[in-house]
Amino acid sequence: MLKLFCHLRGVPSGDVNGQVNKWLRKLGLFKHGDTECRTYSGGMKRRLSVGIAMIGDPQLVFLDEPTSGVDPVSRRQFWRLISDAKGLGQSIILTSHSMEECEALCQRLSIMVNGQLQCLGGVEHLKDKFAKGYTLVFRLRKPWC
Image (cartoon, rainbow, N blue to C red):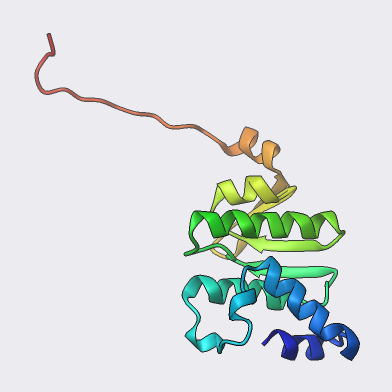
């Protein structure tokens, strides 16, 4: 699959194997490089999808919930990959339901409700403006003594 997407993205023929091996190593799929992807587990398919998005080092990458259903160790690996890509100058648009993930990876956030953009800003700005905290209410049936 990675070779196919290298060719689709216009990676020069001499660089294809290097690109494929680079992403197989980064994604932890090197041992499974010759295995048909239909036999991959859900987490391995997520890794492959991220590799397909990143192959050829595009300037803009769209990732839709890349870590949903992935174990915590793989999630951190994805985060490291995404951070490294940002450090190399790639722009990444990421959708996520995880505020933890957004805080770890994003410089700017937008929040959408029912397809409508509700707000846009930095993580701290949005927290200051919209975070209300939690309120706990305890009701006791009998007095505790």
